[in-house]
Length: 160
View 1 (cartoon, rainbow, N blue to C red):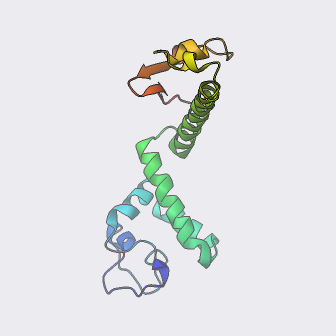
View 2: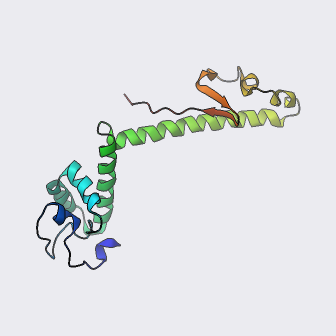
View 3: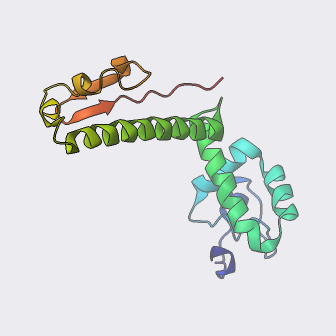
């Protein structure tokens, strides 16, 4: 764990950025090493050094590294997407997961139809939509057929 590594004689990234002298009891030094200046710069830009110090003072010592990792991640995502931040990333991943689950269900249905002898001829059609047409309460306009078979395009939709 980084928080238990011995500190070097140089200032930590936090003290360097704030242009202050790093003391031996610096709260930020174990988590923002001198060789990672961008890590603290991102956190400082989003949360501010004072707020980071307050957060770390309230978190028990064994959990501080996790808290710092979370702050770093949240700061990086917030800088990439200032409006939605982490929620935008989570929503995007949930949408993608939902679409992939749908694709899996369609593929399983197609595989089940192909495994029966009576529908073998329908599996050799050139269009996968001809075989599945009418089985689902959805339109296949959202799907794109490529050389590999049935795929979908993923778009990042902002949540309401």
